[in-house]
Image 1 (cartoon, helix red, strand yellow):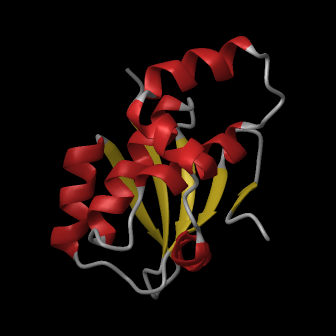
Image 2 (cartoon, rainbow, N blue to C red):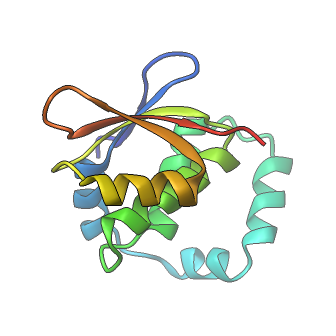
Length: 134
């Protein structure tokens, strides 16, 4: 399975949301996944304590598989994704979309995720996002 997230530069991540949706449609949650969702604090402390060598991008992908849903709007999924990125201390990323978002959708994402969004290219299907650092 090809990862939908790849390192682009030291501080920038490229997240292919289109590919991610395809993976999400075929993702089958396990009993362990359900347990981790019910006790996220346990997973957080256990994962950090084990000194895992998993990269930020892999952790972002894994968390996104647990939190994002094909039953939720793309705008809400993107807001959740950006909140997850902030938790992983990723403050700059590019997101590739299957279609462009309208100005109201972009404004809502900027407001809820506390970020700046710039459309890359002329078709608006790629967004460059800078998250506000707390």
